[in-house]
Image (tube, rainbow over all chains, first blue to last red; front, top):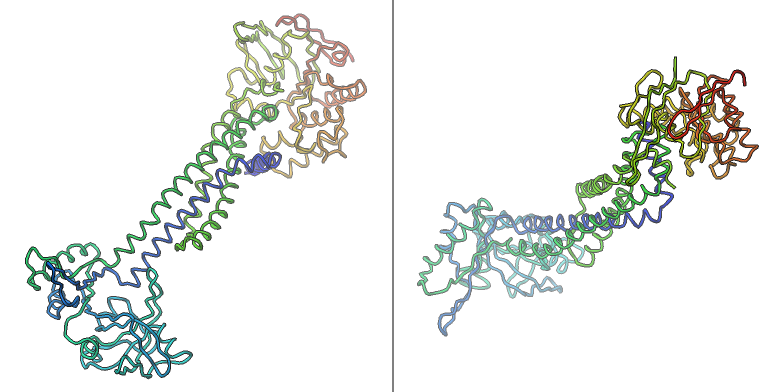
Length: 403
Length: 229
């Protein structure tokens, strides 16, 4: 124990003598470890972003949207092709857990007193809240009774709530949409952004009210379908496609008048964008560590040669090969570990900059720091081994005579 | 009992294409408390002999016993331990670590012997005091004169209380005053009970020993024990 402590002291003293050379040598490890920290932080951030987005969007949701269809020169009149019968049929599929038909109207101007704002209105039913993880920030969400009785009630997103009722509670207040008035019963809890679009700049009213008062008809453009498990998403999309084509009486030569997609798909796609960066940085880190390791080996070899006489002296006073080997190995590890610590700091800094300038979410996990540190130690051990062994095997007589 | 015992020791090694026979069958024993000078010209084999006595080197044939223990076939790590505990070296070039203080240099063998720090400190101070350098504990080698450096080296050699002190031209780099000091110190150390083997080419220096062994061409040519110094 005492001996090991002493070995550390010797190693530190030896490095101090040539501190500039040691610093340059450690640079490779600094870059390597920094890259590793950054790449894991970006990966973890991307992963977290996907997780967060899916949490916001709702997990395992297939979004079925009606589409305009073009047949020859003719075009269908509407994209609201989803009928209540379609919704009911989809709900009966064995892999489906819940369905939420909804209809949105974009760029709608709404007002309250003298305030008005442009927002997006959603006609929804109670399953919507369950599927899309909607929660009430204040007041309450739409109830089954609100929907079945077709009440003119409204839940606000935080953005229109703040614009229409600045500095006061909107609960119980009235919001005008065209000539129709809605009573505000709640404010949706903040959801944040999803690929640039605020999920909070929205209004929610009962679906039947939207259809009756604002649009007419019974069909909707969209239905959110929650699948029981992620693995069943594909088969469910196929089943829905088959079902809707049949119910819509589409001849085989006709295109679908709807689309069905895994709504987390684009998030998963977006995550791949960071993939190239991660691969490159990872490769850079690996190369830097290799070069850094070779640098350490080179410096240690030079050091062993420069200190041949010292090694001879140590051997003459009782240092066995093992002690000499340990001394040089510790020196290499101290060197690479210092580089590793500096690399951690640089890596964390780089991660911050990446987060700021690339706009990617990043996450510096303690585990990745431990990993990077372990890598640095391993580099020292691996590349320090040969020089240390060479020192240990020096012939004491030759070493003592070395000038 | 003999401290050192050589029996028909030979040492040969290759230098390029030439086989050098540095020792061609040397036998002698050194008893406890002796002060032996090994004399010989350059190339006589005396330094090779010292290497074997110091367990820095192994004989090609023959046997070497140190305090009754056979050193001939020991592994390098066992020999390192023997060097650390049983042998103290004093070299011509002092061989102090330049980046360690006098105290750190003297402490070195105790570190490798694994002594606890407090015991080490006590012994280091004792050893430096006994060579008259109690006030130079924190000095660096380059702050000391040649004579002082050699005395630090002697302190380092005796700090482990070895069975034998091996010295190689200990006064070779010193002016005559410092040389006298160092020789007087060795005599005193010997008088206090340490066995000393000193390699030298100088007969003047050899006169300080109680016994002179002469080597030439790898053979022992004379071995005279002097009565009273």
